Image (cartoon, rainbow, N blue to C red):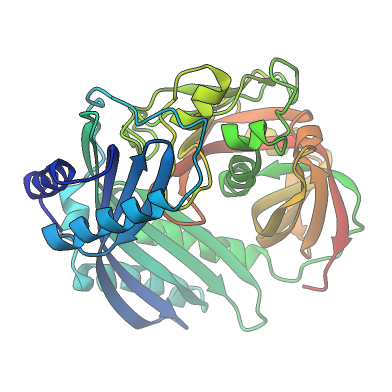
Length: 450
């Protein structure tokens, strides 16, 4: 890992030598260690140290972007030269607002020395504790334990200078019996001392045991209690398809033309807050603009998307600090999503269901069916259970759902006080912090034999 002072000096020196009218440099450096296991045996232990540096330059209103893995003066200088040549050959972007000049971002606590110092032997020991839980139940487990140390730095020719150090740990455990019945659980945190491998394994094992001998039920509208992982997976897709200003401006989001309108139930509030340590905090975006809390849906009303500098200029507003990497061209997007807590317990929600399902998580969600309606499809996975008269009675074979998330989240009838934080399914820095939610008449359209 490159130290803060060395990284800042590298970017500052490179800016001073840039031939472009404007230059932005982003350095994302990470050290990632991973232990994988299957059939209750560790089979892979790897570590990756990588530097990803992005140069975005402007020659007038012509923009060029390139990247390099070389974190040295020569490598970064060549990246800037390539970006400058690309810019000169590119068409003008008449709506280019210029690079943002941003003040210092707030300091956040996002780094754990314990995580940074975790060794392969310590990860193996943690996996061993999970294996012991599974062995006691005559089950095998598979999964992965990943830890990462991250540095993110942004500097531009307008004087913006930001730096952020972070760490995270992620443990996934899938328990399986001889008949292929599975149960799963995960834990995600800044500090690995907040991850209890025995507790994670116990949840996976208990779900696997409870999922034996599943029964088939007819698909159709049914009440569901979505555990936080299931809710987080839906939010990831809503984030991807609807919560950024680019999707709204291009007419792809369910919020297009509906900001200020009721789109979900009164008890649904979705917001992004990069400074909230209840999630994985990130104090600034990839343009170096400090983050702030942004209400996306508040008490069911669409409040608006998140912005980067270019989409903000188009709408005549300020950036909310949600620019993505310039090399990805995906536009702004939330990276610290929260669903507001309610006043119930998860047990209360189950007790209020006459007949319904408890959903552990979803699998293979596709949120691109009709993004204007937030029409999604996907499968249940690793623990789907029938609720009868307020009690969990038996396991259920997996089902396919196809439903508008606007319709579904207009039928939320309860939200838990407790929330859990999940990492982003598509990788990178960020998280979703979600409660357990009761949704009435969730639409299932197909069934399986497993």
